[in-house]
Each structure stands twice: as C-alpha cells, then as structure tokens.
Image 1 (spheres, one colour):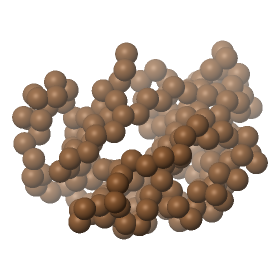
Image 2 (image 1 turned 180 degrees about the vertical axis):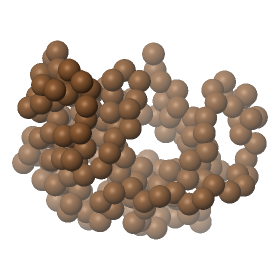
Image 3 (image 1 turned 60 degrees about the vertical axis):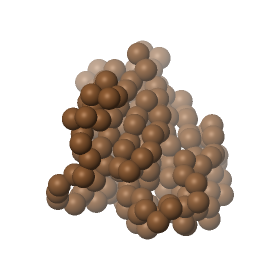
Length: 200
C-alpha cells in the first residue's frame, strides 16, 4: 500500500512482476539494460527482484478543489517488471496516468502490442482537466513489453524522461508525527510525504 500525503490523499498499489524472455542474460545477471533502452529510461530496483520505471506526468497542470496536484501526489504513472518462469519470461504490471483524450489511442496501441488493461478508473474527483488511470499487465519478453509501453506513451504528451524534481524546501507537515501515527515512516519526494507499506 502507498500513502501519499500533502494535504490529504491515500493510494494503494501492489506490483508483482517478471524478467527477460529474449535476454537470458537478464535472468543470470539481473541486468535491466536492454529493458532500460527499450522503454527509454532507467528503472529503480525494488525488493524481490522487481525493476520499476516511472512516468511522472509533469506535463500536466491539474487542480482538484483548488489544490495543484503535482506528479508525486497523484500523477505518477509507472510500470514494474519481475523475472518469472525461471528467467525465461517476465511479468509486468503498472498504472498509466492519462487524459481522457489519451485513453482510446493508448488502449488501442497496447492491445495491438499484447499488453492487457485490467482497470480504467479515477483516483481523483472534481479535478481539472479530467485524469484517468489505466492499470496494465503483460507476460512475456520484457524488452517487447517495454517497447509496447513506450510506443503507447508516445501517443501522449508524457515526458520522454523524468524531469528533475525541484530543490527540496521546507515541508509544511510534521512528518515525525505522521510516521508515528501511521506506524510506518516515509520520505519527502517532490513536495509530497510518501509512505509505502508492502503487503507481505
């Protein structure tokens, strides 16, 4: 479960995923270089051999109830891969952040390239412009899956590589008290206090 707090907001995500089919070296060395190249950015290692790729929608200017929504709070698309089937293939799961106008072209592209959609719904209410969240999953060659996701995102205005977050400044919430109340500590990222709680 992930809890993202700025003035208020909670979101839960669970990712279970997989490794390279066309690249046996991936299973042996856990090198994600080929997937990095295919998806157009570097991933971040996660527990359990998972590699996660982020697609923050820093191109969007979304407000909800008069509050500006930054990528770290609720506009952070992602996909993660985990080696599966003895390293012969990979499982990938993720959540893409899309404008309403982007949903159909992205879905069509993903379906044509073998990536499934498991949900399409809202994480926000009364936001402007309207934003939807498309959950995806795929199983097979991680390089081909990465290429498919890159092609799908190319029909959106998702920045090709993550932009650098603004310099950290004073954070207006008592994070020590939040951590004590939640029972889990977190980190400040992009002006948002993020607490991750994996479901063991």
